[in-house]
Image (cartoon, rainbow, N blue to C red; front, side):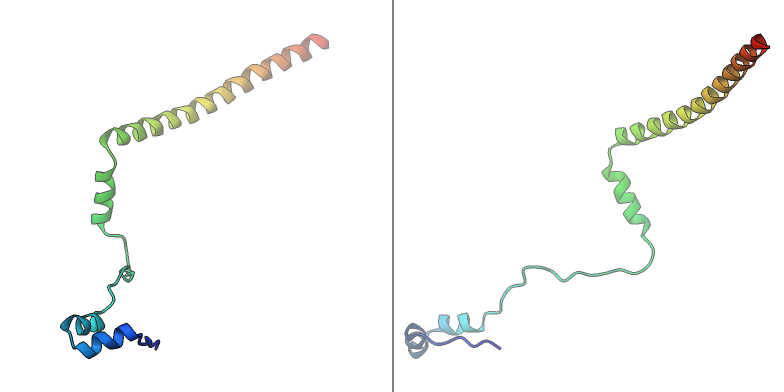
Length: 100
């Protein structure tokens, strides 16, 4: 443990026997940071509720529109590839038919 060295001023205060000197010596240091705690187990529904309430309503609408738009683009991509394959196949076949 680190001990505080007495200075002449400290000796004079302690010799005077004032109450403020004894209060200053017994004062405990304050805690600046709380100790962290850890919970074990599943995330509680209260936490999910807090997250959903923190996000504004229009953000949920934007998210829903984004999901629907993404799924629509996935379907359109598959239709485009199907159409492109059909058109390319018939164009190649017609060119091959003309060459023979």
